[in-house]
Every structure is written in C-alpha cells, then in structure tokens.
Image (cartoon, rainbow, N blue to C red; front, top):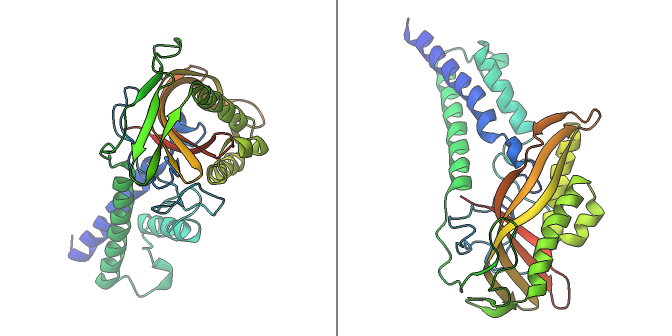
Length: 322
C-alpha cells in the first residue's frame, strides 16, 4: 500500500467513526423527551452564569445553560430569538445548509468521492490533506461543544441556607416550609412562603400537562417568553417527526430551595425538585409508543421561577443535574 492509498484509508476510517459517533453523541435520549428536552435552558437574571448552590435533593452540580439569550447582569427575560449551540436543535453553526454540507462530505468520503469529489482535481495528496484537516476541524468543534455542555460547575459560593419543603416519597410538607431566604451580591433577600412552595409544585404539574397537550397558549401563562420559545421549537420538531410527547402522573417527591433573591422589581427562586413521571413519545397517528414507556420514572432537575412585583410565578429556567 502506497502513501496515497494509506491516506485514503485514514480519511475513510475517520469518516466512518464520525458517521457512527456523531448521531449517537448528539441525539436526545428517549428519557429526555419531557418538557425542556433534557436541556438546561432559560435565564436566572444576573445569576444566569453562576451555578445555584447544591441541596439535599440535588447534591451535585448543575449543567451550564445550553440555551439562553441572557447576558451577565440582566434581569427578568423578555421574548427574543433563542440561540442554539454548535449543534443546536434549532440551527446553529452546523445547522441547516452547513449540516447538509458536512453530511454530504462524509458520505462522499465513505464512497470514495471525497469531500470535494464532485469538483475534480483534488484526488491528489493535497486534496487528501485538505479533507483530513477539515474532518479534524469538525471533530474538534464537536468535542469542544460537548465538553462545554457537560462540564460541571462549582456550587455558588454566596448562597444562603437551603430549605427543604418536601421530603420522602410523596410525604407531607417539610418543617422548614416558611423560612427560605436567599442572599447574594447586588440583590435583596427574599422570603419564600408556604403559598410560594405550593405555586412551584402546581407549576411543575401544569407545565408538564400543557406541554403534553401542546397547548402553547397555556404555556404562555406559566412560563417566561424565553422558555416558551424553546418549548415551541421542541414541539415543532416533534410535529415534524409526526410524534407527540406525553408526560403524565407527575408527582413531586422532594424539593429544596437553593436560593431566592430580588433584583429590582423581579423576584427569583431556584428550587431543586425530584419528581416522578411517566414519559413516553407516541406516533401522532397511531398512538404507538416510539420512545419511552408506560413505566414510571424519576427525574431531578433545578427549576428557577420568576415573578414581577404583584405578579404570579413563572418558570424562568430548567437546569439538569450532574
């Protein structure tokens, strides 16, 4: 085997690895079909880029936001176009035309045409080197994005004491129900009262129900415009696949207040919640299950709620736990 043949073999091997690995790495698992799609999405005001403190319910760290248009120091979010990551579900650098170009190039390598096989003149060693460089560049971009998406964060250093408001498997209200306070730089302490905890639990169920019913109008009354923009995008993708995600039997099992604070006229409360649910995705026409199952499962996520002065609480962010 001469050098040219060896180079072609290397290129094809890399193409095979990419063709097999990328779909697996970037696919959303069936267990993450629930509202939010298993992403960390939304905004936490000026604390968007600070990890919430760990709690008994969520003792580990939380994932960095995959989807947010918040900027450091901003407060209550308003409607704006959502930004996806490198391989964002709504587009991004390798979305649309770029993704098609990449896919065509990989297939071209697999079948001997090369990334620029249709252009001619690149069958020489120079063409092979260019192809290898492009493939390596794409792999490095993908790895960098994946590492950023899954890198753990240290717990927020300036947090106040956590307050448990549910304990056990469906047990009664926790003893610390009325005493949750949060403190932080450039924000005022905020007391979370029993009615607030009840609102958080009610929103958990109502949002999952509205999501399952694809009721966007209802979601607009339960979540911030930013979060609804992500929900709408995910629902549109489900419709494109002729599928609908059904989340039922949602029950809060345990919850802890991580922090609560006030910025100007906006209140924020970040809560770790462990809850039971049945998560399945069915064919829109036949009702056959295409992902998930009828078996109940458990999920732990960190939700942030926000409200303007005198208003109702709305979901402002969902973060996945590590």
